[in-house]
Length: 235
Ligand code: UDP
Image (cartoon, rainbow, N blue to C red; front, side, top):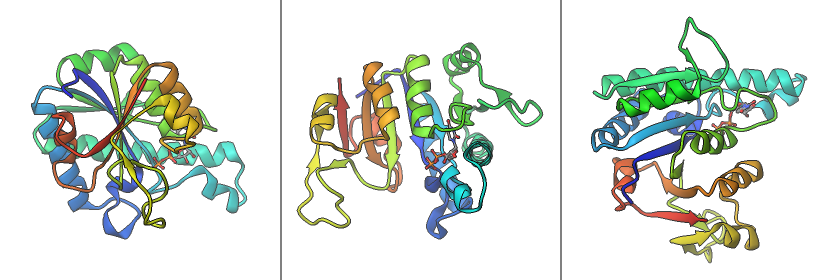
């Protein structure tokens, strides 16, 4: 795989390190180095970052918050991660620009498709915070949406496992890993590649979804060179 432009979905936990929440300096530095390396190899990279290391909307429901307020707090968490990634990627030597789907112009640029395309064409890594900008969605759906509208051929879903398995490999020793699948296979076998809304959007847009583990050093650059272990879910 040597795509021109990709969208990477990073969950908030990818920035959290061993403690599992908040931001971990060493984890951020390593991740940013990997992203900067991949960018230097000439791939245009958009990143949609989650916020689960700070807050997920469902957590707010247990605290007596209504869904819209809880999701607003969740979206703010994703912008915190976008700002941290912007700084860390620039410190790693690649130009980067954070954009938020929820306008907060004193903190970062507001998301606008043509501005994002302009940054990408100038080699900047564009980090998209705020998900879709609406409650009742996830950043997986935001990732599928931005991948489609920014003309990305591949949606790379960074996870803690190296692909899609027939069952959860952590609990089922008989789980087998797929190298390739079609969108139809994933539906027929009821495989959870992404959440339902995100998967439907990715499928409609004809995106190839690449599920890979971000845990190893250099994982992103390796996958973009076609060398890393991953499951390819194709139209
Ligand atoms: N969120 C939202 N709309 C979006 C994307 C995210 O309201 O378009 C909120 C939602 O509450 C979600 C939280 O932001 O739980 C963090 O995003 P997500 O759970 O997708 O983060 P991840 O699990 O990838 O870290």
